[in-house]
Image (cartoon, rainbow, N blue to C red; front, top):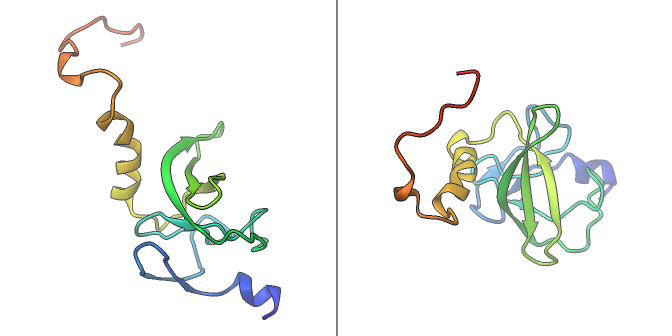
Length: 124
């Protein structure tokens, strides 16, 4: 199979088994499932499809880049590589919000002990 055909191939998500189109709004390379946000470790460099690992990559966080754009943080279940992937225009918003709220569900202190009132930041 030619490199060009490998780049433009539709696929099934290795995590949720949904059929995935290779077309993604806001990015040149489809690199994760828009339904469950999982990925597969297929690239060494963005779009090259040269990784020998081929393991599933779990979405573990959302990162805000310096320009305000959001990226998914994926961790490979095989080799534990961390990769950043641009959020695509068709990504499930509830899945994205779940990743954003994940740290609050595992806070390092009890949230029910937070005061209901407190100092008001300047500028409000």
